Image (tube, rainbow, N blue to C red; front, side, top):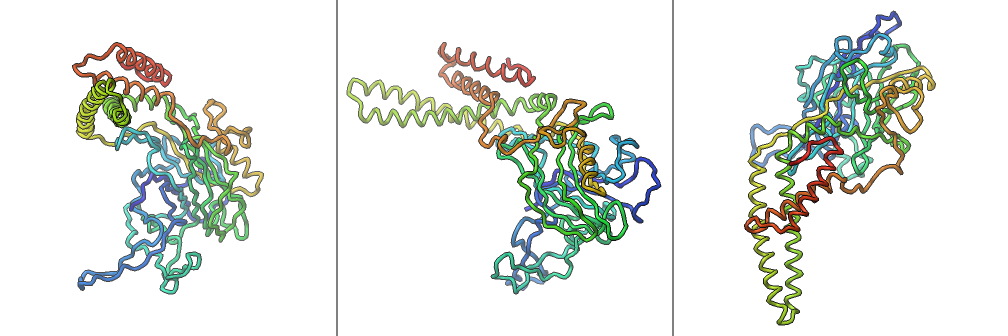
Length: 481
């Protein structure tokens, strides 16, 4: 089972201003991988597969995952932009000298999928962000075959999981990264990982520290020093000017670390909840326009399925009433049962036809809402300086610890939520209810034999259509005719 990936963000470090401050002796390259599992923290144990019984000459040592998920190809979306050449570059006065940036130029935040029905989702499975700093081999390098699996030692079999040991000899970070085909020259300077935690309704998220391994600091080669370190994930709405709208900024503050620091991560209950950036009005209109036909067909499919469920419920009720009906009532009840049974057969045939029509559309995923994603690692000499850096990085110096963070200049804010603010059992929206009622009324009219719908059915359709258009107008969508 392979890992789905949102993207790979990378850049070579370069100062916007050619400052003459003391720098490490070698270049720093920072790359950020956002995937459904962590490369390091979620590395599974493996056990050797038993050899073939038929003596296959091509038999060789194979490994099967014992726990976890094997990382597949990470670079579904691969973006390589240097800050000094990027269209979204930092001006000399903006790029921080104590910060190393990994930045994408642009990607689409939302993805429309059509199985089983049209649905908008975040563009990939967000599970973990892995930030790697070091010297990387050329982009065309394939190092996955050189990965030495974390093989479970024979002595560990049968023991509790917390006592398991590996028998491999190469337990380096560079080797662990090869599992995801992340190819490092030598060893990584530093690796940081954070898990994405989403609220049950999917409208809010936060980052949780999943561990780090720091062989050397990124901003100094001085021995015996420590730095307060934090890393940030910022999602912005690209604009026509250099001033971008920050949709959301998330961060993990790991505190004071030094060369050689290690951590397996920790869950912080007080980590701030942040709103998932909602679909923009323009992206919503694009989604509605480009998925108009599949949405109409799927709307009728869903309404027909609801109608068939109602039919079965009504037929079961009529059967009970017929069983205990008096002679003067039984004929009328049987006629009603026959009518509903015929209607049920007609709607079953219509459902099959609509499902075939939907399959014939041969739909492929679409992407919507371009955003800029920036990942940064900041090392400061004091905790106070770290807080100031965080304030600057998220774009709001005054409201870092308040309930809102974001860009005060644009008014586009991302709310930092408390646990009590989260909706855990969110019901359907007004739009979803109005849409379902409209298609229910449409199916009721279309299911009438001979297209002779009753005035009540026609009136119910007109009312449902009006409510649906009101809900669409509130979202800036085109009215249905």
